[in-house]
Image (tube, rainbow, N blue to C red; front, side):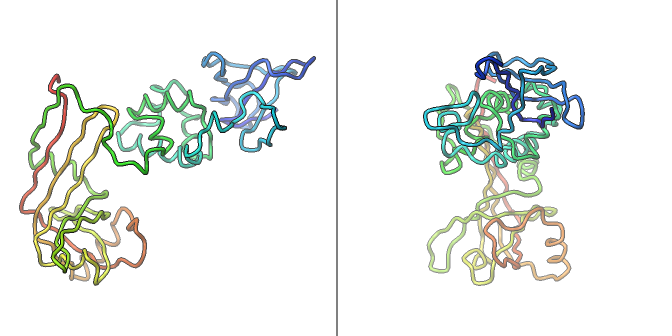
Length: 301
């Protein structure tokens, strides 16, 4: 018997072939996948060390075949247990890893909070795993987010649809905290006037280099037309679970980066390519003359 993390251990009655118990393998004791296993049982959510007997077998979820009409194997994924729009398993793992890194929490600490082995968390983050709802609930609680967010179910909805705090307080941020929140890179919104005079707001991937905000665009675009004008640049974050958030606003002149060495340096050290794709080789820079920010917190703190 050999298993992988995320497989199911099913114990069946030898007389009837019906499943008596099943659980998710969340820990391996041997690299070759042989017993024993740490199993989280579906009926109790408890983890125990199991030495499988002759009435046990391994089920690999990714290789499941459809059950005959009207039948459902114990533990099988159906439309009821895995709703449409839940996101592919690989996407779930990437969201877990991204949220963990964003909050600055180590894999070991996250696994401890979620009551699972670090090896299993590594498997979830790096493999096309399909974790159970109970596992997602524990991970969401450990990361201070929601199951829907880990599944990507809210990616087409604007943030901030939850209820406001009972006693909210708006806190002004100083320049140093604003710079810290801007960090080194991310996605922000450029607000400027289009060539026809109409206002525009465009999301862009940005980099922070020394005291300047830099982003890539294409010649002739509406963002490139902002060169030589004063623009506003905004970044923010909303914590749906706590109904809190912050925003930072930078205002200053925009210009095209023309120095070849500066362009090469920006391209070489950029943290990501533009999400919009395409050939975007024109670097622009904003040097803020004003940097302000606000944070919404609970007045009870």
